[in-house]
Length: 255
Image 1: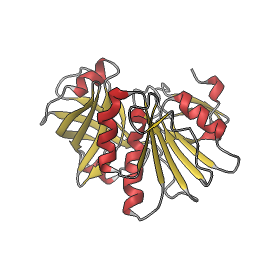
Image 2: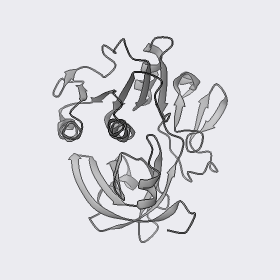
Image 3: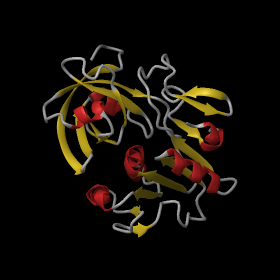
Image 4: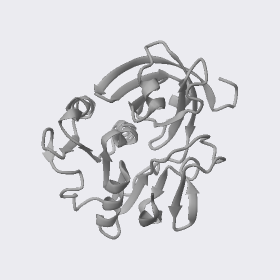
């Protein structure tokens, strides 16, 4: 890593499958682990070579010493290549990038995620528990294929409340079911439809922050590929976000 740079080379220390298309990856990258805050992310691509040419954005899911924890879901060719990397492989990293969740919640906090959207909430729950701050952590999963993923996270966070659409693990339904009435703040990450429904269902006065997923290339705000429609105009998920106040997002204008 160059002095003062946010780019450098990391080494894959561990990678293991959690579902048929999702892997837990651990990468040794001290400068990213040092700046890891809930909601921040990095761009990652394999080395050597230029395939894929651009890094893929991955939320920081946790840290342990100089190691960064990530969840990689193979949704295209680039992420499939990342998921196939062996232990010991070198990777290029850029980060930590973006603006994350507020440093400290205003009141009783609910972390609410969907699928791999649980990644930034994982590190949030980790840091909050280390700080002795009470909170609730809910995660929704699509179906029985995600049982190993849910078991993996529940093993790390015994307080995790799981919901699945087919009832195969946790409660049947979505994490939006029976939202707690005593919550004063929500941090959420997941599919846009879930975030839209969440923001429209939380009572007035409850602060809601959402981490927006977006395609991006540079991570510096130069390519404008990750623009998100907000009440303040088009804003960049990589530098203005990815975490926004839910009331800022123009949900009906999202593609």
